[in-house]
Length: 290
Length: 282
Image (cartoon, rainbow over all chains, first blue to last red; front, side):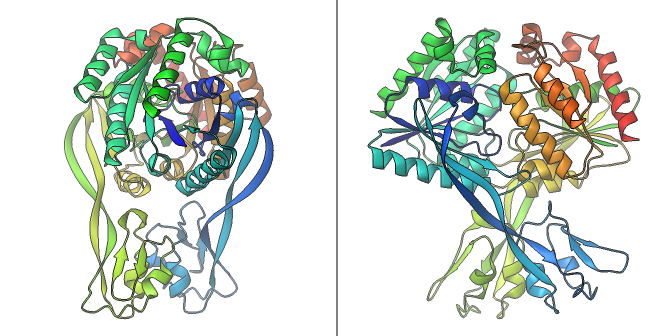
């Protein structure tokens, strides 16, 4: 069983469109949305949810106002500026700042502070017409997205092994931080979707460096390549110099956002040079993985 | 006033809107621009700032003094992030899991732990025309951006008109960026992705008790912006500006040009946007 993740650094370059096309083109895969923060793949795969699981992670401090003596011991020790003093010196916790470290809980001389574990999201196992699909929803303004990514991946691999499916296709998240690192660990191949803009190019450089830092094999494709041919040429050259295969170049097509509006994977919505290119990218990925 | 530009979904045009707003205001206001998308800071491609100063940012991680340590296990027990493991005759530290809370150092009964700095990135400052520019850049391989965003925001001057460009998503880096803002401008596009993530972003702003308004980018895409407008009406979130879907705007962006350089008439529209925000906020 192999795992491929679609990433980009910059958001909005076409990761989810590409992932949905791979789902539609694949025969024997498990699909996973590892962008748990702002997940979108379900909007193209229309899953029927079969299993729901609660994701519990992290804790937050809570002060019992009846016990707090306003001694102030905890205040200077919180590194996250999460403790707020009222006019009488009593302390309360700002939930958006608290990272659940527990320092206040440990130092409080009168045990006025408790730590509450919290439900910070949900994850699902679903059925789609393209195969099993594992996805999640992180709660609003929650943390620990990396752990939820790890959870989703674990379940996807488990299903693949149980059902004898040979590939896990993962739709990744933008950025280079904790959820992206969690999606790269132990992956066989990363496809970077970039675009010929300064941000697309620069963010590709950073995400390629990250993938290489974790010794993950990386290939690249250029979306909207004809928006700026000069920049596309620069990206090709850059990739070439680093032995990164450019496995496809998809043109700027209004039909792509239209297919998203209709909620259909692009390869099932249109037949044109763009979809041919995506099929070519898919075949290259299979070749590289075999 | 502090205005954050956020979106939920990536690539909807946060940076375009944030940069254009800053440049539209620079003649009349004292503007400070913060690029809080420290994982992928891109505003500099459009503002083209001159960077004068670079500050390296560290987070504290524990270092064990083995000569004092008696392997009692207290540090591992209090660490909420499993960043320490105490074995029979050694203590393992996992810096990538450490949040730098200082709990282990504070609570070690043998005073066998001291904190050392781990580099996570840089905060750079300079000027782009009349706009004071600040950005954070997370080092590659570092997982946690919130401490860097906090370090960046320490240099914020709320006396000025502050515009921050937030990262995509709705989790901790976004919360850290948007926290303390007077207004949150949400940039979306009329696709199911844009709308779905706008719902999340609006819920985040609401949860944080920050007033928000919407900019609909690529408004003429697909079936138009009807559904986005319906959502905004139902949630009583004002739609403050629309930008049409135009390949020429995308091409300008690909050359590193702001929408103002490509279409100077937009300056007026961004000034109107700022005026509308001011009215809601006051």
